[in-house]
Amino acid sequence: MRKVLLVAVVLVCVFFACRKEETSHPELVLRYADNQGHGYPTVEAAKYMAELVKERTGGKIEIRVYPDSVLGSENSVMEQMVYGGIDMSRFSLGTLSQFFPELWTLQLPYLYTDSAHMWRVLDGEIGDMYLQGMSDKGLVGLAWYDAGARSFYTRMPISSVSSLKGLTIRVQENDMMSRTIELLGAKAVQIPYGDVYSALQKLRIDGAENNLPSYVFMDHNQAAPYFYQDEHFRLPEVVMISNDARKKVEAVDPAFVNLITECAKESGFYERKLWQEEEKRAYEEAVQSGVKFTIPGEDDMLALKKAMEPLYQELGPKEQDIVQRIGDT
Image (cartoon, rainbow, N blue to C red; front, side, top):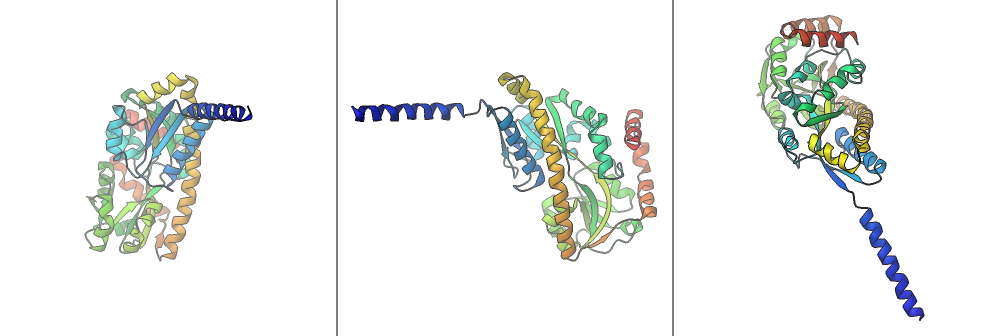
């Protein structure tokens, strides 16, 4: 009799254990793509968002983060999201502006005075306007991520803006960036990011431009030890979800739609903190490696901004109004 009771107890325990395991399975799994690796601020922030969503939906929705471009390049991921193949991702403005030309204005050089100015803009009405304005093409903007400020680095010293004239500078495959370099009297060359170190070593280019963490992470500081910290571009990034994925979320629970947006925004603040820590670490490593930093003086900054006037003069009335509003923020 005792043996029968023991078997019965074991079976009951197994039954409830199985039921518990079944209910622990999410009702919806969302795939999130990122082109950076584990440990990078954007990837860690995406993981943080996934934790928040899982906790606040009671495990009903799970976001699985796929880093290192395993789901494809940014352009490929964008196309897959439009057609429902991927649910969420984080995109640079350079990629997004190919699909949303109105974002072109946010890429203008020397648009913001500093990081605090940019976040006042993006955390306010202007930032919300741009996030909401992307929803008509099958995608929805949820939150802004930081990607730092881009500056010049070269093989030879740069003491002022005039030192840039005649140099060959690598830029991203972005017409705005090429135009900016050319207005400064340098020659812009669009080559793949992975080829920059080799191009510097083989003297094919005189320098490049990027944010400080990427400069150090890719060992470009070893080949171009002069960093001209003009911060010409501040290009934030956007966390997005497809409309198809949003409908799936709504089918689980309509309240979860806003919940995911809130979690994305919280992860944005977390990512900014991680980015600041990464910039500090990168700066310390660059200094230790012998990098010489030059911060442009007031006269140089005025000269840099004046050189960009042709770009700003080409803006239409709507874009000029936005630039004015950004300046007043």
